[in-house]
Amino acid sequence: MNLETDIVKGLKSGCDTAYRHLYEHYYKLLCTVAFEYVGDAFVSEMIVSDVIFAIWQSRESIEINISLRNYLIKSVRNRCLNYLAHSERQHVLRNHVGKKIETEQANDTNNPDNPLTQLIEKELDRKINESIEALPEQTRRIFCLSRFNDMKYEEIARETGVSVDVVKYHIKSALVRLRAALKDYLTVLLILLSVLQ
Image 1 (cartoon, rainbow, N blue to C red):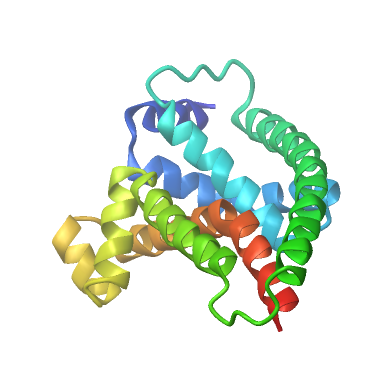
Image 2: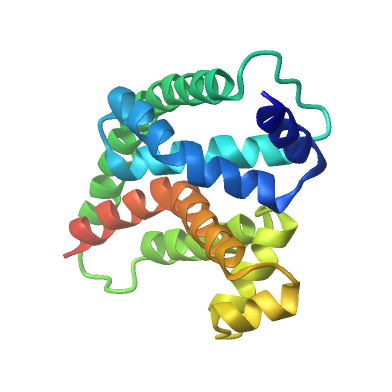
């Protein structure tokens, strides 16, 4: 019980060790719980990472009045239910967008530089930049050092003053969040490209 109390205190203070504890001791269990709801391994990892990030983002005001394990499972379950509801709405939206694209292409079959393609590509580029900016500060810094400065994990660890394991955790979390944020844009772009072929 003392360990769990210390972990909760660490979560509230933003301690890297406490968040790494979540990853090392609860991540697989939570992914299994999420998979039972959504039936997709990647989406399950995305949801669990989002739950852990949500705890980090609201760490100063977070209240955990039940066991940490039960709190995490409940949070994952709720996020899974929200994801399923959102996915249904997105399915309807993608069908609508696909029909719009087909109509646009039927009216402009001879133009290889379709303005709709350019518009969506520009929007995707904007969304990528927005998604990177929306990452938590430490995660964004580590991700940018890795992807844009071509720094190795050990170099990033020295630069930021954290362990290599923490660097790996932040990069993985960043990738999961970026994929989640860009999923719908990539789907629309793939629909567009398939129609334009």
